[in-house]
View (cartoon, helix red, strand yellow):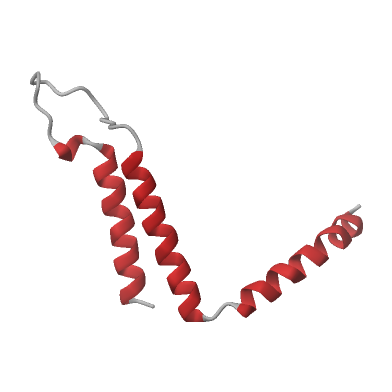
Length: 85
């Protein structure tokens, strides 16, 4: 059974390996940054979320919005990747 599964997946694995080797380091960096930016833009289009209700009525702090923190984390990931590339 193991050999059968390996024989089915081996051609796909070889194609993935060739594709990964065909991408240059600069192209991989650009793809990574573009994916993170696209993810951040998508997060901004989501509805506003808060982990818990605010105690003061009408008080709308943007720091309580989870979208802010998600975009901040994605930005930090991009910065860290650019620094330690």
